[in-house]
Length: 397
Image (cartoon, rainbow, N blue to C red):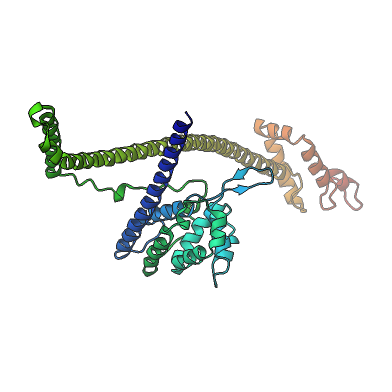
């Protein structure tokens, strides 16, 4: 049992080391492909945040710099996750005229991952990304402190990475440091689709079928008793090689199938997130439209009320004007001479019997009309019949 457990642990370690080696090789290979596609794209247009080649390259570089990155041990013994910016900030602090301090003091970038993404963009615009990575890798003590064994930056692939990034200095980049690409809440996802080539043609299919037929025929022939002997031993190597080739093709197809299934799962998750966000936006739009409708109804009601008040003000002004005209028409002494007084009294005596004047006289009995009449009577310019009778030097006619 002990030997069995030891053998299982050894096989498990071998599988882990093999998977880590395959992962490192794949990341470096995909990074080389992404740099090549960036250089090809730059021949026709300027590279910015909207270019899918750059988005993929930034995700690949972030995955490489985050490969087997150690976590930060807190006071309580727990390990909190780290970003590659923590390593770059320390390892590139001695680079002359670096952009580390300016990125550290950016106001619109708060998280560590967002600062690392901003550093990638600024270094590409400065055409110094290879210089920063080379300076960081030379500080082996700091690199060893931040990364575990088996990391890309601790292996031979690191020198290849610095050489690949040197070709990006010939590209003119233009980035906005306030866009959605600096959002540190979303992980970096690599799209392997542009680098997969399914070049299986009819010739390859026929060759595979031929190999399978030969394998089957060889197996059937070997099962017969007359073919047992030296001819089978002579064809054993060719049979083994054919079997190996078929096995390799099968594993390659299986790996591509697994990747495509993972890609479909990722796209389904993104689609579900987009559908939920779309529902929230529709609900927000409905609430906004309802609020606008209520505000419109309130404004219409206020407008109607203001129009009614304006009409009432016009009617009150007209009534006050009529009242002032009636007061002037009922004034008994409008002139100081005798003719004027007799004419005014004659007009008033001629109009006293009309019903309209009686109605107006009723309206003059209000407090305001009474005050106006008393003020007219108290004026020294108006003369009453009693004063004419009692004034010296005048005799009644």
